[in-house]
Image (tube, rainbow, N blue to C red):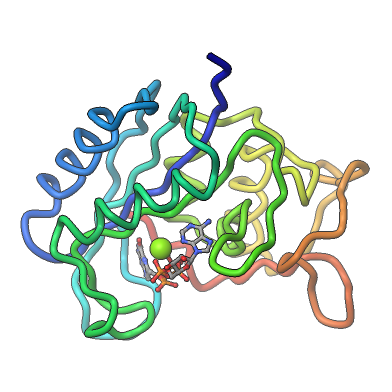
Length: 198
Ligand code: A4P
Ligand code: MG
């Protein structure tokens, strides 16, 4: 059976946070057609978004999977619901027991209702790129055409220097993507306010 490689980002800032992550990884691993091939370390991060919420734990996992991207996302959303997440009652960007985002799926670019891959905000978020770079350092972002480690380093230096791309991180293979363009179709912009890992 052919298997694809997918990366999932995990976040939680409500309840027993470590247990939420461990239980979500166990649920992924016990799903037919999913093998958890690698996990990052768990990091504690300052919340991005509405103020007044608690610190997050974030992590990332590499999956080998026979499920297609749509089915894999459905599994992720079902695991969120099993962990007590109720989207109807939560604020956008606000506290949650469990967030599972499909970050990458092979080198696929998908922009359909309810499913965007690569995740449209992965390159803007240090709490995603930090763990992801541990297990996907040399994986190329299929829209931006640069490695995950390059994106992580770029975001870190952007937050220090407030720059855009550096020549060390040029993107000769970059393709136009759904949500990664800056104003007026320019290069992707790198918000600096999120560089806040503990
Ligand atoms: N959806 C489409 N594509 C995807 C994909 N690739 N992965 C759809 C996951 N979901 C995808 O999801 C809303 C809908 O997006 C889903 O039903 C699915 O059909 P969501 O999780 O409610 O929100 P979101 O749009 O995926 O955004 P995101 O980035 O997951 O959540 P928020 O609300 O923007 O941010 N601070 C720290 N330090 N750490 C965190 O983990 N997380 C958030 C959540 C805010 N601040 C944080 C953290
Ligand atoms: Mg999400």
